[in-house]
Length: 502
Image 1 (cartoon, rainbow, N blue to C red):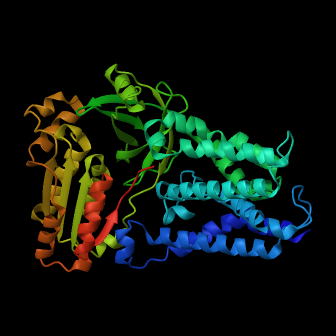
Image 2: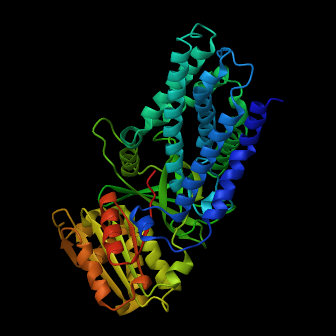
């Protein structure tokens, strides 16, 4: 076996999986994050992963350079040294292609045993996008360099260069379809273009059959888990009840399968509603779960698209017609990434929520009220939304009332709405299940405008709480998160960002 083939075997297959697990273990070591890391809104585990992968790629490139081109390459002339640059780039492209599959591996419960403990699925996706961008860049450089070096030879039918060009073109189209604008506003296009990976990989295998060594384990794991998730979701499908809530929101209510592990605070699940779109899966946070009855609820806010009726709008229309669709469930995934130990070390907890970001922040508030009432001396809950109608949901009202009863004067709440004040009859527009808690929310004092986080955190500092004992947790639009990170870091507070953005 040649040195090049031995190298392929060494880094391919289980090699990338072992790398993933080792970095996950190192990332799990708990240390206090630096202010620089907090300002970047990244976790220590993400830094460890990034540095580890970069070191792995550098070591791989150095080894490929040392091994050289080797024998048996159809497009390489007798002067092998002149092909060393594109050869190393090609090796790196194959490795990045294999690494792309690892961040998107998921199966309920699997995350708790591997990288999900430190990098949950929604945060791992950024590495998938990074690996994809690096792959396209390196593969394009490899292709251009080889085309120029061979004077555009081997592009005839059956030529290895033609197969490589086809594969690169298909991967490039996938990359364009994954741009944020298309992914978030034209999800159907994004999903359809992503299936181009099938012919793209086939063309890549025709170009270089050795790619199979790199894709064998991560690609097989991805396909096996995809099939397993699909079967599990089909067996766990449930008939759901849809209810119309104020502010163009839809409540999905169904029974969680008894044989499945219960969702945790901050968990989410991917839902497939066949009567809306047969192949579309969308993630939604678990708003409420009742362990005794296994009853679970999701709240879906309608997002309007200018080009066509959105998935959420179609679901809302089903609710208005009183439909009870069958829903496939893939989950639950994730949990609040704020640890029990982190809360126990805090004397003052500041929770900042924007819009639907109130769901994880309210879960933390409920957790503090139920388990940390003695250790946390003060809790400040700040919630900003476009209007009160956007947030009138049953669970939010009951959670705020429960926390107020348990924490008493230790809880301070501030509510802001940026839209014109709603009418006093806001609660009458809700469904029967939501009206009482909507009225409870309406009784709180709402302030027009947006919160001044600099002033608010300065007031927190003025209470005398040590900076190291103040935790600022935020979830909401990027602008709100950035403001909370900047203000919290300036005062020396620990800042935690909950993110569920895909």
